[in-house]
Length: 522
Image (cartoon, rainbow, N blue to C red; front, side, top):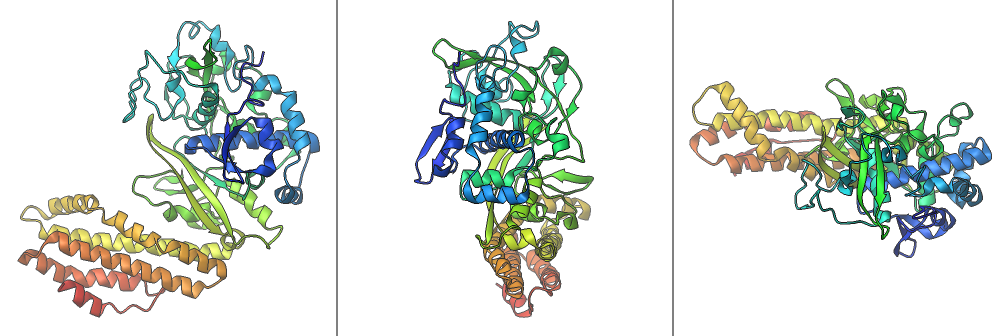
C-alpha cells in the first residue's frame, strides 16, 4: 500500500513561472516542467539534496531509454525541455521504491533496522536527521526540542530531511553496527550548482555524461539491493558514480509511521560508508589550495566567497585548485551556442561543520560571466585580480600589526606583536576590507564580460585603494592620539601607503603622497 509515495504526493517545493510556490510529487515535477522556474527550498541543504535526487532520476531514465547522448542532445533538452515520457516510465517502473513507508524498500532507508537486534527495540526522535534541530548532546540555539517528546512532522518534511541529511551528515560516533561512521558526500562542503532560467534547464546544466561502460554499474539507491547488516557494519566503499553519490545512504534510517500518517520516531544506525577517491571527487565540490594540498571549498567564518572564485572556474588548476565538474558540464553546454545571456548564475550552497558540530549554512548566488567560463586565458587574467587583493591585505595587515604593537604600553616586543595580532583580528579590519572591495565585484565582472579589461583593472585598483585607505583611517581612530600613537603613525604610514602603491602599480597609477599626508595628520 502506498502510504506516502513520492511520485504522487506533493512534497517538492517549487516556484512556478507565475511566482506561486507550491509542492508537487516527482511525476508532476517532470510532467509540468514548463511551468516550473525552480526549486523553492528555504534551507540550502534541502535544495542541494533535492537537486541531486532529480539529477539521478533524469540520468538513469535517459540512460536506459537512449543508452548514450551527446552534448548536442543535452543542449536540445536545455532549449526545448527534458523528454518526459521516458522519465515518467522510469519512475512508474520503480514506483514501489519511492514509497516512504514501504515494508521492504522504504525510500532512501534501511528496512533491516526493523528486525536487527541492535535497532529493533530502540528509537530516536526524528530530529536525529534534522541538521537544524537539537538532538542528543548537540543543542541548537533557540531550538528547545525534547528527545523524549518530539513533535510529529508530516511525511513530506521527513522526505526532504532524509535527502539533506544523507548528503551533509558529518562523520562521527554512531555506536550502532560500528563505533563511528564516515561523513556524507557533501559534509563540510559548499556545493556548486549552475542555475538555468527553469528547473529543467538547471538539470540540463548539471547533468553528468552518459558513459556506457560505467553507467550500468552506477545505480541510485532505489535500484540497489536493500542494505544488509554486513554492508552496514562493513568497511567504506567507493561510489560507483554520481548516481550512487547523489543518493548514498550515508546513515541507515528507518522512519516509523504514526497512526495518522505523521512521523515522530525513527530507527538509526551506521550506513553505507562512503570512501573518497581523489580521482573521482563529487561533481558539485570545488577545491582550493590549502597548507597541505587541496581542500574542499566550504563556508569559512569571515571569509567572503568571492575570494575563492577562481576555484569555480574551468582553469582552476592555475590557481592551485580544481573546479567542480558541474561547471565543466555547463561550460560544454554553453559552448554549443553564444546567443544567450552573458552570465551563468551559480548557486553555492551547503553547510560548514567542525567534526560533528554544525556551524553555519549559507546559500550565495554568483553571476559568472560566460567569458570566464569559456576562455581559459581570461581566467588566468582574473586570477590576478583575486591574488592582488589577498596580497595587499596581507601586506597591510603586517604594517597594521606593527603599528598596534608600537602603541601598546611596555612589555616584550614579541608579546606585543602577539597581542597586536589579536587586536587586529578582533577589530574586524580584514572583514571590513574585503566587504568594501566586494561592492565593486559586480561592476568588474560586468566589464570582464564586455571585454573591457583595462577599465576592469582600474575599477579594481580603485576599490582596493579605497579599502586600504578605510583600513588606515580606522586604525588611526582606534589607536588614539597620544604621543606614542602619533609617532607610530608617522613611522608606519610610509610603509602602509608604500604597500598600496607597490601592489597596485599594475592596476592603476597611484600617487599616495598627498593622501598619506592628509590621513596621517587627520
